[in-house]
Image 1 (tube, each protein chain N blue to C red):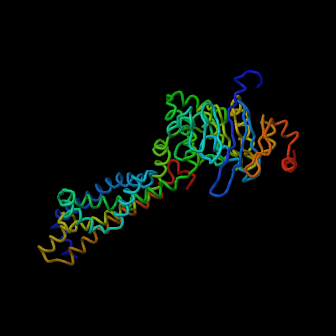
Image 2 (image 1 turned 135 degrees about the horizontal axis):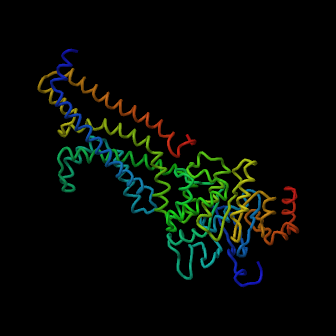
Image 3 (image 1 turned 180 degrees about the vertical axis):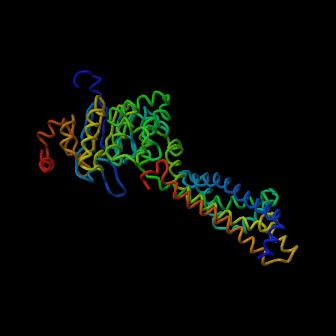
Length: 261
Length: 225
């Protein structure tokens, strides 16, 4: 993790990010530098702006102030910029292919079976051959423990199974960044384990990840860095050991204590 | 009763021909309206005002003018307005397509708007452009959802065809009029025609209902229904 200049180049840089929903300000001057390969647990109570922050990274949300730098692309309130050129809608779409996202509500394509969910974007967007996509899909389905569900439609699967498929679908694109927006919040408690195991085993290795979660034990287990948001402000950001060991604010201390950490 | 059956038998060719015209008009205009309605719905939902404004106007116009007025307007006014002169059959086809496409556009739009926002977000996050995600993710789901409504509009379209006799299209209703003026058997002829319409429309709407129940058990509707 340390040493080379390659590793030192940040993966994602938030610079004074501000966002409003109408009159309500949901992000206040958020700044943070996420190193390459970091696994960042984004913590905070409901309504603290965690999901919104993560959704700004792949531009599912726009914002009103500051910017986000991802690789060579600068996201600004006026649009995504590369060098001095504003990206077209098509180029923004291409930008998103390198950023996988896993949603709270899974969002598998309801009209496609599992295999087609996995290969739709690699074939249609990245232009892979169908054979190559199917091969990778089968490999990933085996890794998420659902090799026999190729033909199943999402509505026939449990929430935990759907979310594992959704993770596989995002990984099909071989993204260098993964965003997890409360991946287990819609699941029954007994199903969160299988999903978190898949996240840990497959999604994180070497890749930069932002994980919005309420599972503090999981965050402590996998995170290299921790960000704590409170009412849209960053109250803690740093290596996991530091933040968990010596939180700066009383509020975060109480937050961790209440979770039994 | 005996007499009615005799009349039915005697004029069977005329009535069958009329029924054939009625069926082809309704099927052809329905097919055209399925395409035009979809285009209109996509236009209405477009973010570009120069597309959404005329599309919305078109749909509102089609839905808020009576079919009889549209029919007469197309047949007698279009030659002067657009320089388009059709035979009575084609004028009827155009008018029925106008009317039906307006209603179908609303069915499609409802279907498109009912597709979960999460489907769109997932498609975007996988790098799909707006047109790709519409074509591959939203429309297939929207159209499946719209099927019951679309089929019901076919029933309405079929019944609307009886108006075309006004401009002398030889449909079932028009043929009945011809037979009546030749035989003065007003009551039995129009009763027979009413029964024919009823039988056909009843059969269609029952099939629609059956299909609508059957659909949810196929494909992705699986456990959702």
